[in-house]
Length: 450
Image 1 (cartoon, helix red, strand yellow):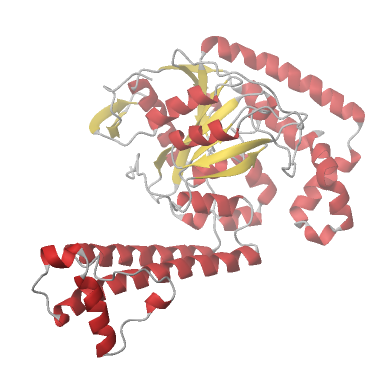
Image 2 (cartoon, helix red, strand yellow):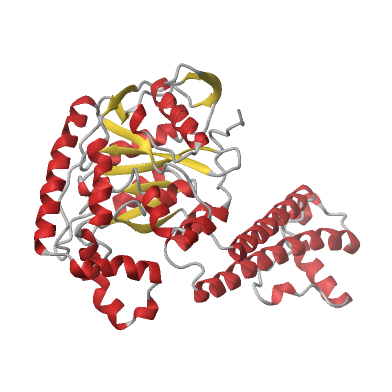
């Protein structure tokens, strides 16, 4: 069996989400940062860091041009404590050595800034970084601690999983959606991408709140999850679309929760999965047409042909269709309630597999529906969720699970996510649901229970 890296914490390869030119740019910037680290290390080891006593962001790129300039720089260096305490016998030639290390370090920093900012502006103007891609790249590469997105049917969780990030989908109405361009206004919520659950919780603290100008805003509490019975789909209901590594990683992820004190319970996931058919074939497409239909009809060339064809299907929806779909949705939600009598939270793959950009472009409707297999029901059923990184395939592509809780349990889910996403401290063995076992780098289980 191919080896699987379970807890690698670095960002995954960006080829799954970014055009080739963006990937090359980011790799180049990463190489420059690495070079700057090496030069910075040499600067520190040679104690050259204070050799340049003035910070001139623009003109400082020029080194001394003649003997008088060098002597002037050396005289300024003699005025600082480092010269008197460490280098009282230093000559001008010795000063030049440490000066060049510090000058090279600062020059690389300027180059890194230019190499990032200028292409970023270019890609942004060309549309290569618009939408969630730019937000995810910014967080996944460590350029930002968090970013905001929207989540109607998985857009705040699936991209998080594919970029090795925490993706918080709050309960609908917890964060105001006023000013957000809607997809399905009755379902939309603002989501949070973050590097870890603590950052996500901090952003939630700042952004949540009742907004009287948002008709879908609600005043919500923060119920706890006091036990750890976690429901998973029955074996015959798990679908990984031929991705055996994702299937194995899901087994390992659920075994980790058991190792941390959780109790696994298989539940009937059929009511949850059935919602996807309502979403793709039902009147909620008409709600999307209500949001952008006028613009789409007057500017057809401004909308991607696949998107235009999908949303245009909402033109012919009848009021009867909308009511019948609502009845069916309420029936499914009622059927799903038995799961919550058995479990305190649910755990499912964030997505059943992952595709290359070329595959999505060749078959966008079917493959996007596949990606939403485990995601679409959450806003329909008024649930909260947190996407959590949970390992990597042998080819380096990331896998994630989603912790799903009842309305308003975001903070409780984030605490559990934090335990699962903890930096590994020891080595142990996990027993999987199929009876097999795997060695795994596990989390610290002595600090506290979930």
